[in-house]
Structure formats: structure tokens, C-alpha cells
Length: 267
Ligand SMILES: C[S@@+](CC[C@H](N)C(=O)[O-])C[C@H]1O[C@@H](n2cnc3c(N)ncnc32)[C@H](O)[C@@H]1O
Image (cartoon, rainbow, N blue to C red; front, side, top):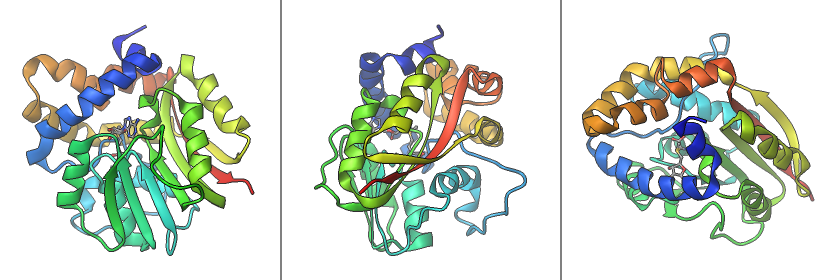
């Protein structure tokens, strides 16, 4: 088992590592204005999104957010994004679809400070919180979104219970993430068998994410080299999924599986 897989599959190790890593990383890249922390998505046959010049550099990352949204309506809805990271997706969705409320939540207080300083849009707010204990009343939201973050959580079925609790009946859950082979069964079983969430769609998106990784490789290499000390470059480039990295190779071979799902909260 490689180091990355080891970190991704061991709950206690990953919880501690991510709780240290993300605030450290946010502080190191603060000056670079990094608004997305995902591997991105590129589907050549898809209709090309219309983006503003300011959003254009983040196109592959925004495309992953659009893949997670799919047929889920945001306009006029109360939306919670769990693990919003640096808030690029939250800002794009709040500006583009005008929800009644869009709350971006993340465990990383440095990321939430970054979001509050950088992203202003009507109905958009950010707060610190844990995916495993969502700080909201039952039935607070029409939509919950979750992009490339649940592999950090110690208890994925427990997270789904929290999603079902804060969603209104009929509310939608848009989710995308990755797992190594050894973690896929537990992940998929939790999604398929949840008592209060119905799985409407599950799509394997490895080829599209691999293209996203490749498009972002020059940017992510520059970001890592500029922000981190040399001894961390190898590990950080692997995590960044740049072309030729362990994670990129595992996404190509299928050893790592990247999926996008839509679910509905049952009445
Ligand atoms: C790979 S980043 C993805 C961020 C964002 N969704 C994006 O696509 O740019 C994973 C995020 O999960 C957050 N995270 C990890 N564990 C968490 C937890 N228990 N509760 C809330 N957020 C958590 C991290 O702080 C980080 O911002």
C-alpha cells in the first residue's frame, strides 16, 4: 500500500493529517489566490460553459462543480456546501444561480477566513464546522453539495446520516469523491443502502477527472513549487494529482475510483 492510499484508507490517520494539512496549505498559498482544491473535470463532448473572464482560469474546477450539480436546481433554494474549501465553487454557484441562501462550511478556519475576505455575493456566507456534526437544525436545506472531501472524514455513513438530517424531504444531495479500491465497497454500499436517501444516479468519472488533472498540471506544479518547501514537493505533487504522479496514474489505471452521485432525501 502506498503512502497516499494509506492516508486515504485509515480513518484516524486521515482525520489527523487533513486537520493539520489544510490550514497549513491555506496559509502557504494565501498570496496566490487559490479558490479551488479539487482535481477538476473535463468532458470534451459537453456543451461549453459560458464563464466570465475572472472565472475562466478555473474552468476545469468549475466543470467538476457543474458535474456535481447536474440536474439539481439551486435558484431560489437554500443550499449547504459541506467542505467548501477556498470557496471558489460556492462563489461561482451563488453568483450564477442565485440561491435564497448558500452556506459554505469547512473544518479549516484558515479557509473560511480566506472565503470571507475573498468571496462576496448575495445570500452567500461561510462558517467553520465539521461534516460529521453539521451545526444546523433538521430539515434546514433544499440542497446539500459535497465535492471531493468525504475521503477526509472518519465516518462516511455518519456523514450521510447528517446530510439526511439537515435536508428537507425531497431535498437533493450532490456528491463527488474518490476512493482507492479497498474503500469503494464501503462507500458505495453506504450510498446505495441509506435508509433516508435514495441514490438517483452514480457515474464513474475517472476519464473526465484525469483530463482535469492534466489540464491543471502546469498551474498546480507552479503552485506547489511556489508555496511549499522543497522537501514537500514530491508528496504535494502526488496529492495535487499532476500528470505522472501516483494519484494520476492510479486514476488512469482505475486503482483509484472517482464517482459523482445524486441522491434524494426520502419523505
Ligand atoms: C480536496 S478539498 C476540496 C475543497 C472544495 N470542495 C473544492 O473542491 O475546492 C477537501 C476539503 O475538505 C475539508 N474537510 C476535511 N475534513 C472535514 C470535515 N470533517 N468537515 C468539514 N470539512 C472537512 C478540508 O478542510 C478541505 O477544505
